[in-house]
Image (cartoon, rainbow, N blue to C red; front, side):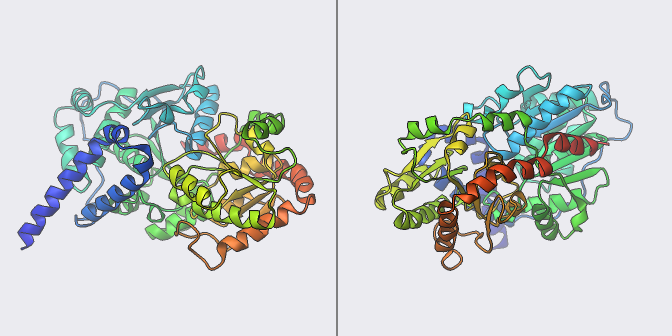
Length: 488
């Protein structure tokens, strides 16, 4: 029976790996309204298959001793590695950092991404980096990577690396091989990986070819809080945490502590580098045209407007956001609501809004290029996430002088001066999507939103205190200097 089970697990793993390889094509074939459900189901199956495999990392790969290397590292050359430059908080911070480093570092930093150029949604921040001097490219294909590694590090390198990575899922091992080639061809001295799966692969690839320093930017609370978690992540992180030349970053103290508890390492193993906000954005927010944004939506100039800026994904809890909106409207019928952003839960949100008779007061303009216009139009900003790292949108709302009401998810509370720039709703974060969760959570949050809407003093106070609070804690120059210093 055990042999039959082992065969079934092997066949399931092969099937899962084939589906991973076909992911770009499947995203185009599957209707957008089904992306969320299909993705959630697939990730659950992936975890179930991988959980049956051995989950111990025997040892991380090391560079071959005495191997020929015709392309030695260039001192100070930093290679950033990401999934994409899509419209997300981590990608925005990466774009800020690349732009800042390109202006002050010689040689200029480079960036490779797995999904750059796949579709416009994965290149959102690419235009902002044009002309900066930063080199941006797509990760090379596997066959090319193996050939270049054999040329530079010798014919035995790839087979040896493959044996060292026998513990890893096939797609992860493949990513590591591809990134190892990028590192040696580009002659990187430092490798900086962004977010969990890419950060782990970049770090292991860096160790395999012997870079001087490896940095991983974790941007949230730990993976078990999300559907993308995979069993290999914990053991890989634990092995990397034991490496002296690996630096682990998080952008909030809450996020760093959560990772440390998950991995069983001291909280001091993670360096906290808070997000930075670009001074140019402060100017843009100050000059934003909120009246024009309201007019485009059809919102009356004097109507209270509760807004949010977030992806329509489960961890942001858009159905709970709508539940709060419905309760606010019951007590303040003139109120309107807007969510800036897009995602797989949009059809479900529209359906629920129609069922509640809110289709005429819930506005979903999708992603917008100038978020400052949207913020300037809002009377209050609402975020009800179950999990967060450091939400840039909360920082930007404070810069725009908009009072914030937010759940205490991850590092969110660290972005609010509670009672001054907004209200932190304690005990309202959690894993459940929709109105379910802590008792009366929607009513509790709605009470806080109404407290802000009914007190004009909130707006006056936030316009003065918000920008000052943000500049003190989230300056862009500080973020660039602190991060670059970690490269040694």
